[in-house]
Length: 222
Ligand SMILES: [Cu+2]
Image (cartoon, rainbow, N blue to C red; front, side):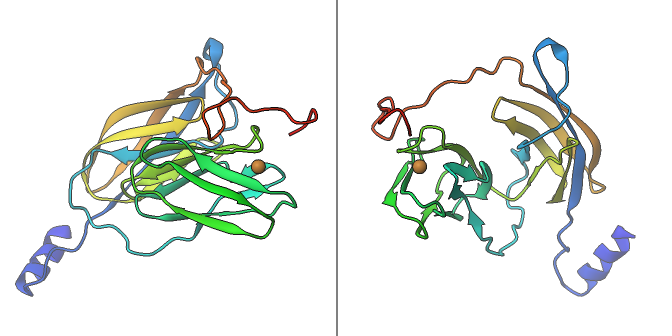
């Protein structure tokens, strides 16, 4: 059938329609001792090192990471290079959102309830986002080269749509670990892809403030 569609397009002097497939599978989080975590949260699955020159959707997404109850909501966001992320503050107190991550450093300064500031992420990579007032506020922004990504469902299943056939590296990320594996996507896509994400060696570490110094506790509270 595809051959006939191709020939029809060729005879009309048109270029071949964009072929895209779907990649689906399941992520398993492996904890210490080899046990698997029952509920999967905040696991990003994305395709890297794919064929060059694949078309991208040109719709503009509205993305936000809100400061609410001294937490970022959501805590993990994926943006495509050049996309804008809005950081609204809906708390009754001031926040100062910042990142010291190389390539996407920013400092939005102190701003009050109801205010919002934007940042455009220019370089791919994982960006660690914090508040300079509240050390418990931490978040992650994944800056990706394209839209070939998906967040896993709580049962670990994932589905990445609009994938041009080719050879890729399938990467998965959780704040406690990451993994990568080669994958071949045919015109029919790739299904039942199993991803084992080892989170057994994760250790939580404190982070520094925007000056690269430890946070100072004021009156016993943040
Ligand atoms: Cu804050």
